[in-house]
Image 1 (cartoon, rainbow, N blue to C red):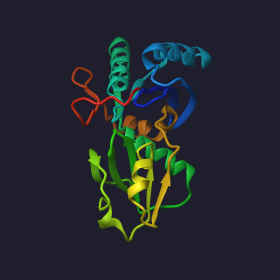
Image 2 (cartoon, rainbow, N blue to C red):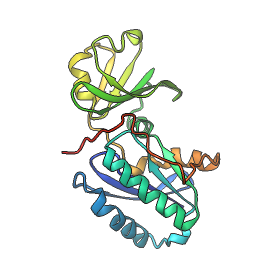
Image 3 (tube, helix red, strand yellow):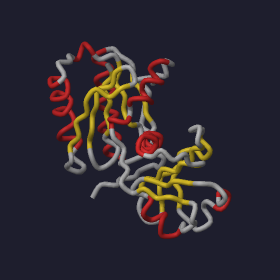
Image 4 (cartoon, one colour):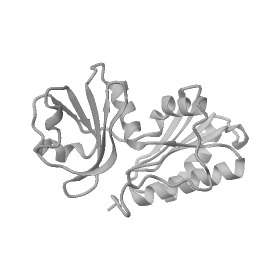
Length: 221
């Protein structure tokens, strides 16, 4: 049983995952309230499923990119639990996490998958995955320009996330599909966290820090 924590963007969500399946998930719809509700949600989720802290085998956390404050809250909670329970810490890349929702929601196979998180002005946090989920462009802050995807103009592309709206304004190529209502959520940890568990791909709890991608970035208020 793995506890999954996502405080990277506006909404805080947590889930229990077991053997590659999501057992249950709780989401707080109030924006930027992770510091107030995270530990309450954890208590509620465990109680609802009759799970004790001693039953947890690992804690997984969305390691970014995202809100600077939100990432710190999630990382601090996850590290504290792992230290207290002496269990492994698992990091999940937030951009890859967003892609799990796209893979579940759409039957179409795209040539390239491009998640985007709004980073203010014309900048986004983004990366590029191919259809086998290999990383073609590593996660990075990117200032959007009209020629951003010129090298991919003959391929089917899907752009998704809250950064996609600004991309849509300047990237009007016909082969690009845009999906705006995609957020990170703990319920989509299931496959990613299970693979990391099987491969013992754990973080060093003493040195772990989220992937902020920039020295300081806050997308709250």
